[in-house]
Structures are given as C-alpha cells and as structure tokens.
Image (cartoon, rainbow, N blue to C red; front, side, top):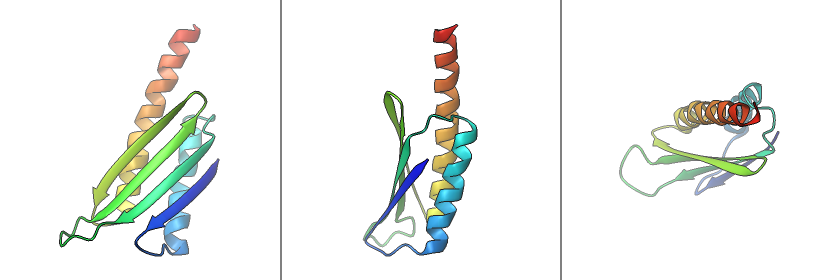
Length: 101
C-alpha cells in the first residue's frame, strides 16, 4: 500500500513517518485491497496540550474511509485511528462477504 504522510505546521521526523508506515502496514492483514493511505498530521496553535491532530484517509475499491483523532502525541492519535480503521475494515469485509454469499 502506498502511504503519503503530510505534516502541517511542523516538520515530521523520519521516526514518526516510519511509525505511521508500520502501523498502516498492519491494516493489510485485515483487508488486502487498500489502495493507498493519506495521513495528515497537524499541530493546532492553541494553548491546550491536546493540540495534535492525526487524520487518516484510506482508499479502498469503491469507497474511502476516514478517521480523525486529537491528542497529546501523534503516536497515540495514529494508534487510535488504526484501531478504528481496523474495526471499520472488518465491518465492511463482513458486509461484503454477506452480499457475495
């Protein structure tokens, strides 16, 4: 799967990009037809500590799935997004298998 990581209002280091790639590679075990992933890592200019937004858009045949989380660290947000996307992909896979059968 092709992964495109974009960082807004900061420069993402290679360690963070590798973390995102590793987490998204795990999604292919649940659903092998993921075409590509767009990852947006944003820092809001607020005084709150939870100012880091992780947004992941997955493209699958015929549809797109989006997840957006806000937290203190990008790693936590990406981890929560991947967990949510896993559940959504499993749900779509079950729905697809029911329609085929």
